[in-house]
Structure formats: C-alpha cells, structure tokens
Amino acid sequence: MEDIAGNIAVVQRRIAHACDLAGRNPDTVRLLPVTKNFGTDAVLAVYRAGYRRIGENKVQEALDKWEALHNTLPDLGWAIIGHLQTNKARTVARIADEFQALDSLRLAQTLDRHLRAEGRQLDVLIQVNSSGEDSKYGLAPEQVVGFARQLAACTSLRPKGFMTLALPYTGDEAPVAACFERMLQVQRQVRETVAGSWDELSMGMSGDLELAIAHGATCVRVGTAIFGRRENSVSTPA
Ligand SMILES: *Cc1c(COP(=O)(O)O)cnc(C)c1O
Image (cartoon, rainbow, N blue to C red; front, side):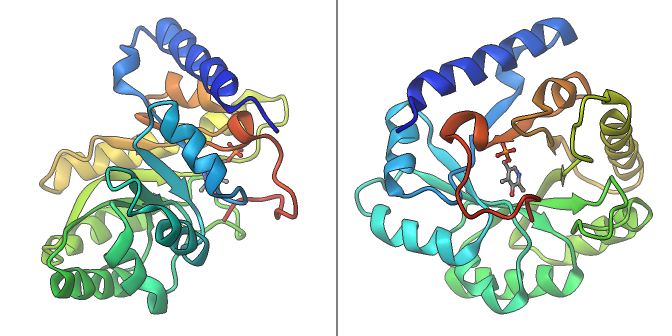
C-alpha cells in the first residue's frame, strides 16, 4: 500500500517549488488527485488528507465510487476528466461538480438538457488537443473560439477555461512546452473574443506538472505520483 499522505506531501512540495521558480502564489494552483483505477480506499485517503475534489476519467467507475461514498462524504466533489459519450451525459449531470473534457456541441447541449432537468449547474472546461496526436481527444486549437462562442446558449454550463494533455514527457522539455504554449495561445484568443474570464488551465500530470505550472497551469491532475502505478491501465490516458 502506498503512503498516500506522504506522496501528497511530496507533490505539494513539487508544486510549491515550481510556483516559487515561476514567481507564482501556490494558492493559484489546485492539485486534483486522480483516483482512477484505484478503489474507494484511495478516495478516502485523499479526503482524510484534506482534499474535497477528486478526478475520475471514466463515468461508470466514478458512478460506482460515488454511489459507495456520497452519503458518507457529502462534501466531496467529483471532477470527470475523461472523454464522455453523449449517452452517459445524464450520469455526469447528476453526480459531477466539474467536467473537464468538453469537446463537442452535441455533448454540451445534451449535458445542458440533463442539468436543467436536475436543476443543477456544472463547471466545464473545454478540452483542447494541443499535441495534435490523433489518439487524443479534444478540439483542434483553431476550433476553440467558435466553440466557446456557441457555449453561451447552454445556460446550465459554467465555462471556466480549458484542459489539455501534452505530449508524453520523455526527457526533452521542448515538445511538451510547445503544447502548453499552444494552449496559452488559445486561451488568449478566446479571452479577446468571447465573454467570460476563462481563467482555468488544467494541464500538467505526474510527469510534467512543473513545466505546466511554469506555463500558467491553475489545476494539475495527478494520479501516479500519489497512488503509484495503475494496474491494468492503458498507457495513454483518455
Ligand atoms: C490518468 C489521468 C491523469 C493523471 O495522470 P498521471 O500521469 O497518473 O498523474 C491526468 N489527466 C487525465 C485526463 C487522466 O486520464
């Protein structure tokens, strides 16, 4: 069993150090522990460490854990960070506090409809494919401004910003940094043309969180560095 509290302390120190180097206040970077592929004990451990929001990339897995825990931990919030099929939008509208992988208008409209039926609102981030890899979900950078404009019609969605996955970090920072820079450029374009603050930048994971913070990340999504290696997991996150 991993020392989850100890690992979180290490990650917090990494965040603090990266903020220091970037001249940023550590309070401007939120750590989202990603509990995918780990059980409810992992969720409980981060809750005990003081965290009130966790990230899950698959809806069914999130729902199973939510059903097991939401009565005992009513103040725990659930962030869905992985690609969502329209037919699962209803579950997200019911249980999620945040959805970070918004990537189509049809999905936005379906979520909006279910949210209205539930009488809920949902913080959303637009997922941007900053690496250009076919295997990655998200909108192409040049599609984002038009999409952000159209979102205004979905009044139960509260657009907060963007989420992206960089190219895998393999020792050369330049290609990873280029992804984050592309993301920043998209954020600037949207801010110039579409109402809203668009402040949130969810980027950076276990391997590249320092570089993401140097580029302005406001949320880092961390799994492996807290919980250890995932068994039976696909090597590239959704
Ligand atoms: C799994 C996952 C993460 C966490 O990745 P680690 O490298 O384990 O820290 C972050 N974001 C998304 C979208 C994920 O699916």
